[in-house]
Amino acid sequence: MKKTEEPEQDMLPEYSFDYLKAKINRFAIKQAPVTVTLDADIAEVFKDSEAVNRALRAILLALPNSQFHGKT
Image 1: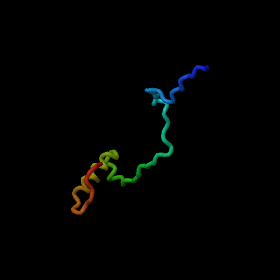
Image 2 (image 1 turned 180 degrees about the vertical axis):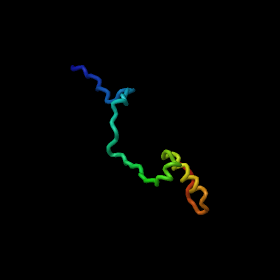
Image 3 (image 1 turned 120 degrees about the vertical axis):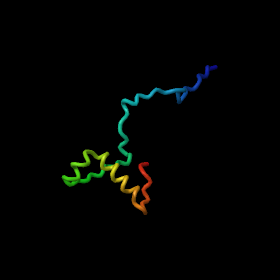
Image 4 (image 1 turned 45 degrees about the vertical axis):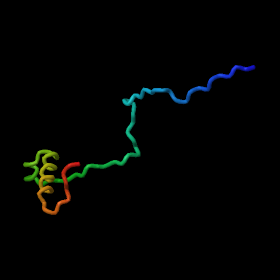
C-alpha cells in the first residue's frame, strides 16, 4: 500500500507584507486640486492656500442659508 501524503496548505497562518514596495492604485478615483488665480492685492493678504480656505470657510459659515457645516 502506498502511504498517503497530507495535502499542502493553501494559506499560511500569517503573512508579512513589505508595504514599502507597494504601488499606487491606478484605478483609484483621482481628485485634482482646483486652482484659482488671486488678484495681486488679495494675494498680498493671503500668503497660502490654507489662509484662503480658512477665510472662505468662515464666510460660508456666516451665510444665513448656507448648507456648509465645516470641514469634513
